[in-house]
Image (cartoon, rainbow, N blue to C red; front, side, top):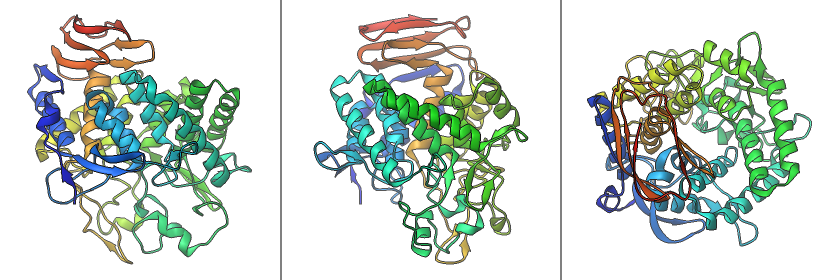
Amino acid sequence: MRERVSADLFRKQLPVLETDNPDISRAWNLALEDMLSNIGLFRDGLLKEKAPVLLAGGGDAGYGYDTPWTRDASINTWNAAGLLLPSVAKNTLLAVLTGEPGSYRIGGQYWDAVIWTIGAWQYCLYTGDEAFLPLVRECTVNSLAYFEQTELDEEMGLFRGPACYGDGIAAYPDRYVTGESGILSYPAHHPSEKGVGIPIFALSTNCLYAECYRLAFVMTGDERYARKHEALRNRINEVFWNESRGLYDYMVDAQGREERQEALGESFAILFDIADDEQKEKILEHCAISENGITCLYPCYERYLPYGIGRHCGTVWPFAQAFFADAALPLRPEISAFELKTLTQNALRAGQFAEIYHPQTGMPYGGVQETDGPITDRWNSIPHQTWSATGYLRMILLNLAGLHFSKEGLTIRPAKIADVSTLRIRDLSYRNAVLDITITPQGWGKEIFLPADTSGPRRILL
């Protein structure tokens, strides 16, 4: 059972959004409340005493997730929590680490654990927390060394393991089905001497490793990481890019490749500059998008169609929508606008940010997946899911309001991707400053830069 923390302790530090679009204003407030409802007391990893962390989801519903997850902690921090709830985000990042002094590394489900580095780096960009950087650097370097030893396939030049977030068996082809609901059951049925023993090479996971190598170079200045980043980037393009589809393929293994569209993989390829400009254009031109947003994996695996839609294939996960909207913004802002509009509508219809939505109805929908043998439809879409809520906050703050963070400071470049003429964000804390940002009808597309050492109250008018 989770130990609750009063949301009132944190509500006062959150910014206020004012727009002339009541739907977006209402959805923003829902997202904030869903995020707040998932703050609980927790102790694990390098968090030595119980402290407020962001749990994965469930809110006050009485069921859901009672612990942080590494990828959730990282994505929530990256999305907005590192800016809006910096102390809680930092606690959550600490809680998913493992090891002893001098050998700390990232814990949790192994395959996409390196996403922690991206979340931790973004936290540092939000806050300027220089004291945290040595730990981020240590965990990144140690984790890369560990996973190079255990999961890097030297012949393929890629990292083994499932897709980012894809712990459910519904994310994988029939040959990986064991009757159990998780992909982690596969090694017990197919023993291997290679690492954990899941012989998948997934697009999204390898994109994460490439970005982690890049950040390792930024943090250490060690040219070896720059070379490894470039080698992995090139290998991803050699193995996964499918010119005939104008998309990256989802995964490869010894038995072939899955020519499916992975929302996170395509998004990461764009966001991390794995794809070149021409490839980015093709991805955004060829991606299939349902009437309620891009689906996590398309098309759905055929074994689920008699029962419904797979939990991890064919369904709409809002956090993946948010990454896709972010990736599309520079080249196809209309895609970002559509993802923002559909998620706004779905959240308002449900009165919350659910974990998963149905691609046709837009209602919360847990999908179908194997459970102890047969396929069952009793899977829940966890209510008040944290990364769904923070994904929406990302869409508003990083896309619509156009907040772009760097070591040097904050660039504000709002994008007209919603039916909004005026937008104001009040009481937004950024490092040592408190910002009051107003975007007028003439301000969309304009730009202003605030140095990282900006302090005190600042009013910005665009």
